[in-house]
Length: 112
Image (cartoon, rainbow, N blue to C red; front, side):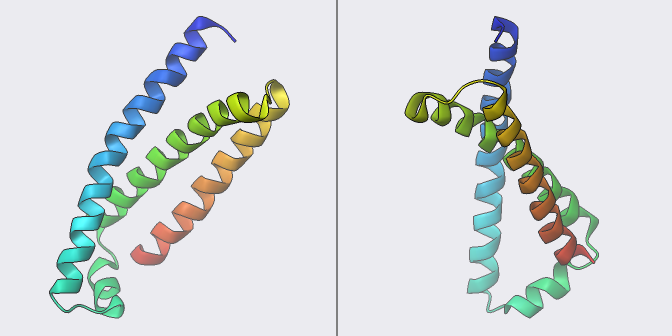
């Protein structure tokens, strides 16, 4: 793999980590605030349903996870399993697609 590709993966991993740090804090704060306020799961869903803001927030959350996790697993596969080459990258791209698909299904369920 070229130095440029490795550098791009490194930047994508770090950038997605920065996004995830902010999004996880907002997500957890929102959950704690809602639960302490006495909201039930149904009441929370009533408030999020149809909200473009929450849809955008969680869509970006899913995108960041879809970028971050497979890149991290790529390193784990190399270091722990000594797995390298096109088969590893294919499996990780497939895994990223599954993350994106299932994540967006969850996002759509709170929007629609």
